[in-house]
Length: 258
Image 1 (cartoon, one colour):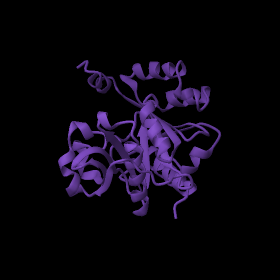
Image 2: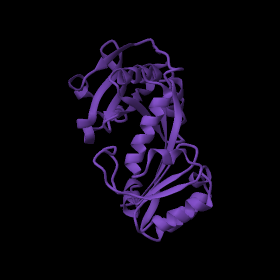
Image 3: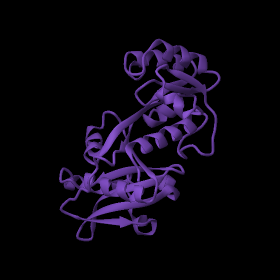
Image 4: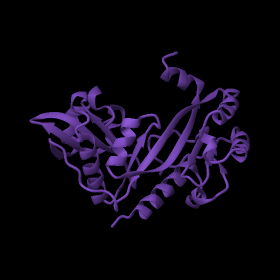
């Protein structure tokens, strides 16, 4: 049976693959900087090697970077503590160094893991159904773009849908992002929110994933309060944070500049 400790250790092991470091590095008190490298076992949506990636499980920061940027990021994490490395105004120091090389801080996200000791099955006023890929194939629409990803549909392996009659009103999808961990994404139609639908389908999907001996994980931007509340209500705890640098062209494209 999975415990929070075994789940956390599995997540650290995967982060170690992603960053090209040792899982034990995340439990150290000193910040660590390592050279990024591609790895076939990494989460399949990551673009490796990283130019600059910072990860913290709370004890320290592990930075994985290119050979060119490794001295700069090492200097940054040596100067600031684990929490301050992810905060403004300190983050501007890192971004200034990235800008000199045509990169910018791009993504900042918080990741959550389930705690089986506090989780409980949640229900809502609507019928919830477990769905296979054939059954959710029709739902690759803008309304459910967080639960399912059209560009990466080959990794969508399982879902739980909430139905008002035969109308799909909420969907939690699982993406097999690596061998051991499946990521959960959730969408609820606006008119059905604040009724417990999101937490019902999220917690149900988490149980279904663990029953298949995989570790469910959940990602949210730190400012997405609604998503964070859903994670916590569904029995997930904050586990780690990530900061990702991308090229200036990539960031500009996301911002609609080019």
